Length: 193
Image (tube, rainbow, N blue to C red; front, side):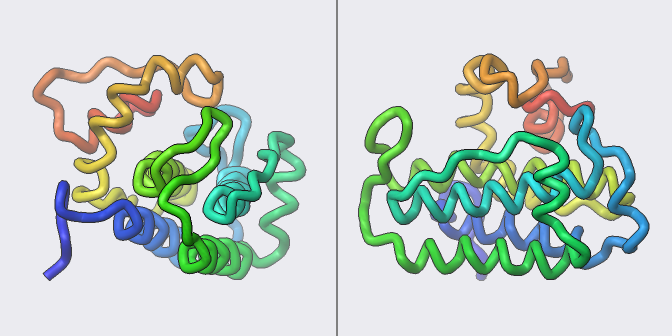
């Protein structure tokens, strides 16, 4: 039986979010990578490049060797190369390898030491939401895992003002109070459900 919601640990949630990206990337047509994405100024190739860069950052965090993020669109696109699925598969493998290497219960972040489980929960948002962005850009079925969405939503809602203040997320989009959790997550991260 697959663990769900609150009973699923952070590593399992991250793995499921990564699998969602796998499904989108594997189903993409080669010519689709230049399509616009929901992320302003980023096409599908740049979104995937960002996820590849995030993979290096996650691996660095797990090994207590932080990496600087890449912010230039051309550099993000270059990370994808000529074989997007292969580039993503390598990045996904890099994260899994770093999870196996992680031996500390705390991870050093810019804000100081944070519990391993909490860091994994925070970084799960990246493949989860950018998997959705990719699906939109590539016109694929989105793979927002409902159990992962439910698990990360409280943390995202609690931190949404802080996340928006970084400039990396658009301001929240209003949704009805009774909106499905999927829509609440998308709206909290500046996407129109």
